[in-house]
Amino acid sequence: MSQVMVADATISNEAIVPNAKRLLFAGFMAIFVAGVGFAIRGAILGDWSKAYGFTDADLGAIGGAGLTGFCFGIIIGGLLADKIGYGPLVAAAFLFHFLSAVVSLIVPGGAERAVAYQYLYWGSFLFAVANGTLEGVANPLVATLFPHNRTHYLNILHASWPAGLVAGAFLSWLLGSQMHLGWKGQLGLFIIPVIGYGVLFLGQRMPKSEAAEKGLSFGEMFRDVGILGAAVVCLLLAFFFSGIIASWIPSARTAQAIGYGIGGALLIAVAVMTRFSIGSWLLFILFITHALVGAVELGTDTWIQKIANTLFGEGRGNWLFIYASLLMFSLRFCAHFIEKKMGLSPIGILLCAAVIACIGLNFLSVIQTFAMAFVAMTVYALGKTFFWPTMLAVASDRFPRTGAIAISMMGGIGMLSAGLIGGPGLGYTNDRFAGEHLAKTPYAAEYRSTTPSTFLGRGETYGIDAKKLAGAQKFVSEGTVATPEQKAVVDAYQQGNRQTLRADSVIPAIMALIYLGLFVYFKSIGGYRAVHLSGTHAVEPNGIPVTTESRV
Image (cartoon, rainbow, N blue to C red; front, top):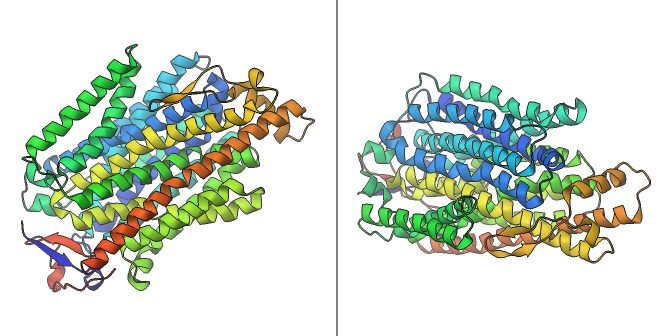
């Protein structure tokens, strides 16, 4: 398949269809819904813990389900988008959003821990499926609408995520902390923007991707993904299915074997479909790196409010979260300036972002005052802002033959990683470190959780009993006369939080090394350049000639 190397800086930024801005805004609203729901769920984790006695690992798994289901929506949506069109996928997402609300909200108030866990886990999972289906529409759609300025417009599209986080966190604070509305009333709010994106998409015609325009088959679209790229997805799916099956059968070994069997079968199917194409090593590296992106960005976001509330007082975590999200929203409109005016390629942007995120997490782990927390959060937000959309832009720029498949699989990998590794991993790590600090006090036997936490085959660890911790935190945070026992328990939990943030900073450090390697690679081949399929609308928009100028 003939491909053309194009320098985005010299090509018109005009969209390829007249209704592009409405479609961009519809996609914006779709991801906005995901942000609203994600923020509200993060804000009510403490309510769930107090109501049902969940451990941090339980909360991490429920939060993780709100991410893992995303993978199924975005990957299946990505596979179908170029064949059935975007309209049916939007309708399916609309239905899944309403179902998720029903399942989450019908959990009885006095339900047992195990019963409540199932309702909230599967409600979160359905919510994620809806979000993934929508992103399986929005990402390839925007990449198709603006083929010569993808970094800019994908960052604008994903500015909706922090915008939704701000709206959700603010509404949760207003209705929960100030008006004392229960968690069910707060959670149901995301239905309002669901109706909004449905109206915006209604009746709109949408263009085909370059791959669909060329009429490529599934096998041809998958060739760049190949066995290497599919292996990343299939491994994460094996983890996912192992966990699900383990809740149905008593043998962990059998569950793991079945999970890996499902992942292996899917990998073989891809190998056969692509005629045993190994795939692109570059796309393989991008997939692995995006797994790290999901773990550090969304996995951390799952816990950051709860950690900040622990360190600086109940409710203050919401304000830090809102502040960081507003920064992300604003900064994502600056990607065009950074790329075009400052001369940084997408890889250069990612390299700088990883270094800054690593510094930010370490900074957050040591600050002692709420005022300095804003400074540390500024650094962290500046780093994490550009990860997700810029990674999608790189995959879309370099692999147009994959159509919606590569960027949809990349999104699925990020969410699966966040759900299986980032959220649960941080929950497990927090339980472990907090438990270790508690063990140094005379109160370990009384305050240690009776429920063990586990994570991907690692040994059992015991954190702090959630209900007893909440009681101790109440006395300490309200400034009343707290006992030495209560102070020691709260301090142990806070120290565990700080140590967890330091451990989390290792992930962007690894990402920075990967991006540095990619930067050197593109420098060696003449610079980062976009690739377009010949004979498609992306090559010569509006008669503007193609250039081969490049930049790093």
